[in-house]
Length: 122
Image (cartoon, rainbow, N blue to C red; front, side, top):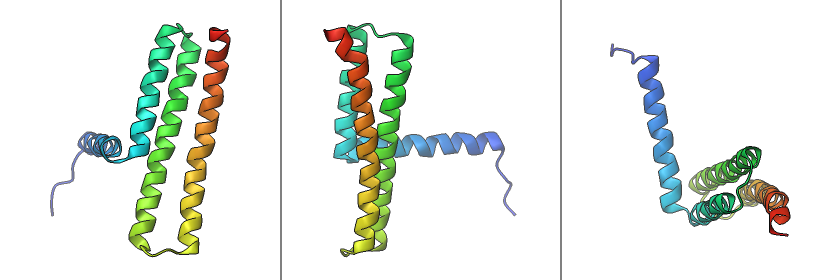
């Protein structure tokens, strides 16, 4: 029987797999590339407008939320296409709901950006 790996070794491997997944998302998914670019612009805007620590936290949580949900959406769509490559109403529903979750998070991110930056611009 093979020796069981330690908890720490398993956690290190898990972080490695997660990092690889994040890199795969950024390298292969156009929507994540766009969102990453927007995140860079918003980070630059944060420095330019000298936003508060609380505003930074809210901004980074919002960016993380949108990009995380986009990653889940990509995983759901890829799995759905693998399981049922042909068009199917139930698969279409699943993919639409996953995309809708990204849309909701994106609208929330836009509202957060307006709340943080509109008062600083005017």
